[in-house]
Length: 297
Image (tube, rainbow, N blue to C red):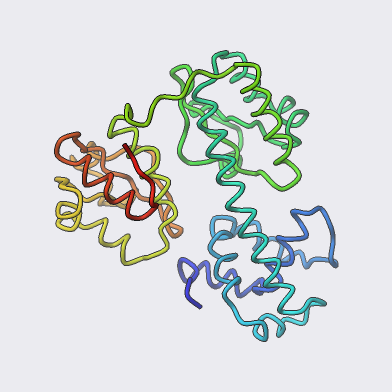
């Protein structure tokens, strides 16, 4: 298997469910269908392991058919692999749409629309989602579990931070796309800033952060946590990444890192905020362009 699950705990939970069972349950759960009576114990593990589901789907998609057929589900290994591939495509579509939605929230002209997106009834009626599309960063909810359904990185609208709901499934996509199209047609959005006008901090907190979250190479993550490597690659005075929390997260160093962490391979890291236009911009743009093929300016 090319892609491994993040850690031993994650691997134990996947083994407890069974790789084929995990894919089948994820697939049929999202399509509001029922394949069979799902074992409660496995469903409990499924709910506890949500942070690793993306890695699970990727890992299972690369397994061999015969290995998946050992779990004695009424599905062939080929069918499980087909489901895993479809779930991967849904993930990519969902992320692209969520990124577009996040960007649109920052351009809304009417603060009343932002308040509506924070309303559960509005979100359920408009998008079919049982959670508010936006959760104010400052809001202290009665349930910490609620925060699991929202992106870690907030968006800023009218000077306030909001976290975007990430519980989007196939049945919600059309409603969300219709809403966004309607806002564009009605002129409810501010004009986009030209890319050349982006400051280096905006690039770091935008595209760079998104690309870090998509890293699947543990060795690269270790390198980005190394000060000398980061200095050679980007000209920084600090490591690009610092593990969030623990002894390394304290002391005077923490002021040189953004507060909001990024999740990479199941762990949280804080990103260095000590970037300068003249010293670091060209090196940062080259790194992004090399990894994505995107021209920055």
